[in-house]
Length: 441
Ligand code: EPU
Image (cartoon, rainbow, N blue to C red; front, side, top):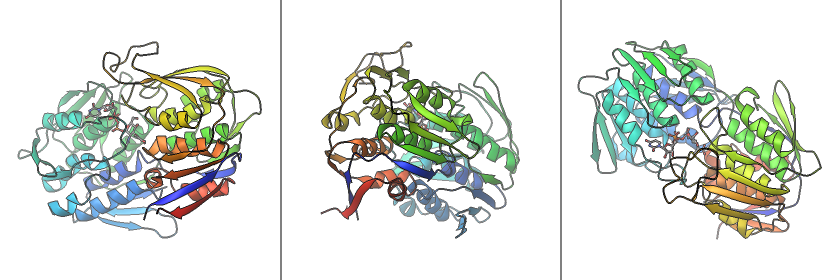
């Protein structure tokens, strides 16, 4: 049943939260287990919706997934992998974008894959053309069928020389998951190299894959006929950590984020410091806090790693509504990731969105009709309002705006936030937020 979160704003969030494995790695490591000929163990697994979706998709394909009741660690046994019924797979349509990554592993395991129409956050068109082109280059045959896509490879997958038109995270993962057991060598140029991708490479290397990453965004994979299992602790979720960091700034609070890792967040930490946020970096986490003075405006462009992540943009924009002066944010990864600013404007934020590239480098959205640059003038007094959560990161940003605002906000659609933020209401309660949850009428 859907719920309504009623938030009484104005309380600084203070205390400690724990962040576990990354939403953008864990489901992919689960899919990788399908490539092995023995069980794998994945540790530091968060309780989020995307993990549930992939668990049931793997189970439908005969993979046994056992969860340790104490630690939450997953043991995934692919030894009885089988074809699943299309109706059963179809029941998962619209839930997540992860199923597209099952293609390579399923073809290796059972010779074919059926992938339901994909869900995921509504932050642009989010096409899958790169994925399908990559699969075709490995020799796969892709057919559109009712409710999804059928993919087979009568001659098996063969290594290929592939060049991505844009360093897509998902398409890079598609290549990794398909190439490790393909016949021959694959060379991928224009690859994404996000920490979650490097962690997936670490998983595959534990299984027996041979993968090298070169400094020019080229990844070289020497196919091997068989892979074993892995035992891996997932890297921590740097997007969740950055979200709590922004929440500390927006609410004038002080949050220790256990699990936040400096190495994977360096670009975010530089920006946080420039805005005027306080931080103490420790071995087991990072304390983020408002130092009490003014916040500074800044000019920022999102980019692929090692640039400023697109997923950090939305919560940081809420902080920029509180900075003294004009900030400019140019979104270059997704064409439509500023929809969430409508609710902030209704709350009193001063934000204009523009079609032009307001950044140093014109991006691929500049000559098209996309509102992908934002100008934010602050500081603005935010006032509580009714909000319907649009997408994962935008939704979390609305929550932190409501937590900082004067008065009461009624937030609906909060189930979307469970896709990527583990037990977020428990965490908010632990940080002293003033809210309650009721069933929607
Ligand atoms: N793109 C295409 N065609 C494709 C694939 C991508 O045009 O076939 C475009 C996209 O439309 C987008 C750009 O390429 O404009 C980058 O997309 P990418 O493939 O890198 O994104 P993704 O793999 O679908 C992952 C994360 C996103 C994160 C992006 C960028 C997962 C499950 N999702 O998406 O995370 O924003 O990489 O780092 O790993 C989130 O966590 O809220 C989230 C959206």
